[in-house]
Image 1 (cartoon, helix red, strand yellow):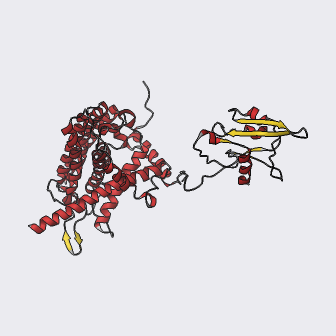
Image 2 (cartoon, chains in turn blue, yellow):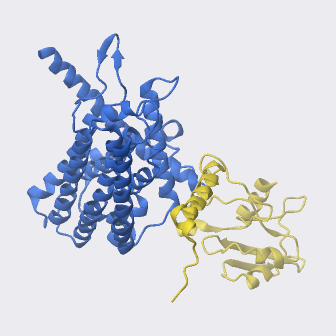
Image 3 (cartoon, rainbow over the protein chains, first blue to last red):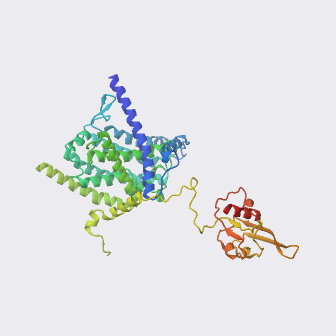
Length: 326
Length: 149
């Protein structure tokens, strides 16, 4: 009992460190990729090729003075970054990065929890994360923050529907909500081949969920300064920032597990395949970010309700009929 | 009503988005245009117009004859010239200053000069702690000529 608890705690620490480091280096990747797509260099100054830039940013944010504006609702203001951050980090518990891992001869499970409702848990947590944003917008007592959080909640609720419906299709094919079993069902064929339409819908709604660029109305700089976290400073701001990027990685992981076959792949070790696929999905995000302009709010809602949800519904019906016949 | 020019397949296959993606990926693999300025010197083009210099004769004296033409043509009136008569009745340049903080580096003085004296150089780094230190005299301009050679 004691040993398993210690192993669990060590595993938690390792996974948390990896997530936080990868979130930090995701900002570096974003700045580099977007920079090169705009024929610039991106960060080059701090460390070799600018590799220490995320560390420098983190140190700067931690060292900054924690300013709390006088007009805010203090308790809600302080809780909301924690809610958002915890929800996005906790969802990583069920992501299986490989079928089996061995560390110095000790066999370990490459995930923290093997829930039989894994995908449901992730969707639920990402919905709860929205509460943090709404609370931040309300507690900040600022028009920009309030408008940003209103937009965010509307956007997240509409796109979560499309996302859930697109997730249902691979779940139907695998016959399980468990992420491990979904991955193992894709041993012979990745679900992206029969389910290319829900994959596209998933990518679009994941971009909307994480407030990335074609859908970043929440933090539209020209209209809303920075969106729901304008009033936040130092580490509280950093928590929102980390949560946003952790969400990006999370949606990429879920896309990998549900559609791109998870750890399945020839020759290379399973964990390497998993990370290659996640990086590929993230690269697609960044690529779209530097290509597309921002949508108008009514266009965003129209795309969600009038296009994505009907297509996803039709797809579910067709998939279920085919599964029922076969 | 305005006719929708896009056809159905363009919409469902995201043709326009893929065109955009193609453009960005081309730029991704092209060479960045960033100049690493403080670390590497920027490229100076042949017709670059930087801080002025004054050409000299073999004895190291300025070619300037004190004709006032550069001061007359200067649009920002930053060239200040004062002349005096020498012992043999020739014209001597008593004072010749350029206020580099007012200069717009248009190069008109170089074009106006009849004596092949004032020229635009390649030097571009100018730092001074007061405005008066931007006002340079003949000595500075002549020394600048040595630097340019």
